[in-house]
Amino acid sequence: MSISAAEFRAAALKFPGSYEDFPFGPETSVFKVRAPSSGGDKWVGKMFAAGRLDSAELSVSLKCDPELAPQLRAANPAITPGYHMNKRHWNTVDCTAADAQTVLDLLEDSYDLVVAGLPKKQQTALEWSARVAKE
Image (cartoon, rainbow, N blue to C red; front, side, top):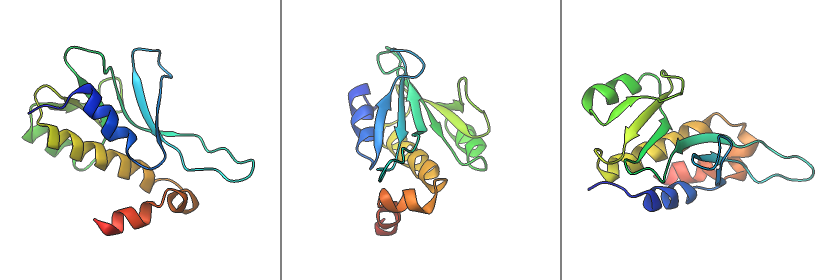
């Protein structure tokens, strides 16, 4: 069973520090993660997912480990190189062809990859180490 746009949005927004932004215009949802800031510091959000959620044929771009990306593409025809993205680090997933659990797993992996690249202080603010350790 495929995932709906509403289900995808809800799943993307459940991660600590995640929010939806529209830097490319109102038709493209971009999901970013930003750690809570302290004092006057304001950390810029980092993108972990993007897509046109109002499209009839829902597809989303998700960050992926560059070593794993080609394997995922070879194993699943619903996964292709990232559309308008760095093809080494991003995959585009046809959500009408991929099952919902696959999309959710890839979304979580994308979030984790982005947070893993943040400074330890931001990871701690997101309580990311504790979340990953629990799983």
